[in-house]
Length: 384
Ligand SMILES: Cc1ncc(COP(=O)(O)O)c(C=O)c1O
Image 1 (cartoon, rainbow, N blue to C red):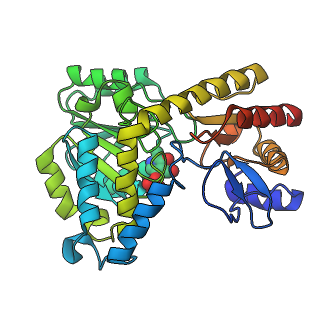
Image 2: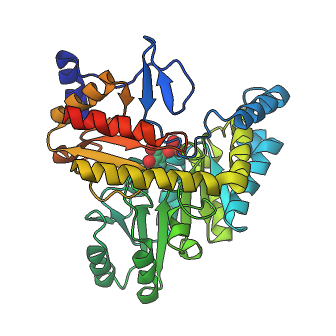
């Protein structure tokens, strides 16, 4: 069953929960259009910044000064001081590396992968890579092989079999639907045996959530300097909007600025968004560590509780936690009952995930409490 069928059938059965109409800011809880208040496990607001006073104030100040939009793509119509500061803030976060800002990280993958692929003869990617990676790979026209999810032995074999080729390895850092983390240490070790190999990590969920300074899964694995391309987003842990790519090869990044249509033929984020993103990175520098520590405690606690409940949560060990069901309609039913108890998760069915691994994805944020988690687990216990 695919998502459109699940949606239709859910409507018949009264389980439909997609496209909820929300009438409150993104936070620990959310108010629906009919006035119901829900505990919100459906946002990726990992550091709890989306509705932070400083973020809102900085967006308003930028809008007052520059209005709600810039004149066109930055290449022709220019950019504000907020865009410039944001660009520099990405580089600061990654110790001076060259970076480019994108309107979304979807656009970053879709635009940069085809250019990175021009430097390769073969792309090897994790089968569960995000759809934006897949779109970029298909657009590139470069030959590719997908290795089974997290199967580094298979990846090693594919690299060995293709010693004569220039290879680009692409994977999520933190996987968006499974919540597990790619074994970046082992992937980086492949460079020792294969000098013509580049590594591209889309860490949309990892940046801000992992690593002592918030650089994400690459920092947590101690491999930031070995990665050729790191993609991040401001739309999850950092509570704003916009994507970025950090490049190892500065000269190549400069070429991307001119050759990448999703960079130079699409409008950048508005001044308000750019300003809020700058503030998010300032907050990350001053209190990100404390926010991540609290989130990590909550994550550990939630995993323990779910383990005692005996649910299948695959190999997640992050704040992205799937609760898996063998049948999509069973997942839809449990999800609808959770909504009935005031808990909003995200229902993932094919094509996002395999049929027999349909799931409710629960995302934890800094603003949740252990009592929120207890209520969610207790509700799941009663329903399942
Ligand atoms: C792994 C991954 N990459 C990219 C994206 C796109 O993020 P953005 O909102 O910046 O386009 C997502 C969003 O769900 C994602 O999970």
